[in-house]
Image (cartoon, rainbow, N blue to C red; front, side):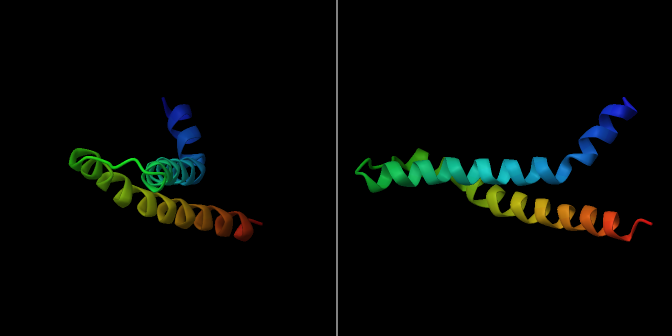
Amino acid sequence: MNALINRLSANAPTLALASGLAALAIVGAAWAFQLIGYIPCQVCLWQRIPYYIASPLLIVVGMISLASVLSYEALRP
């Protein structure tokens, strides 16, 4: 169990950035369909709200954790 936790915590910056970029891709695809003429219903618009919140949050968390990992690696002797 500890090995799994260690492995996941080592990949946390990558997972957070990948999740944030995937959420951006989903919202971008929805906007693309809207631009080519598909009108979304009210429920579809409501379903986008979590993506609007999660995308920037995950990207910022990923960048902060990646910066902390890189600075820790740089300070290691």
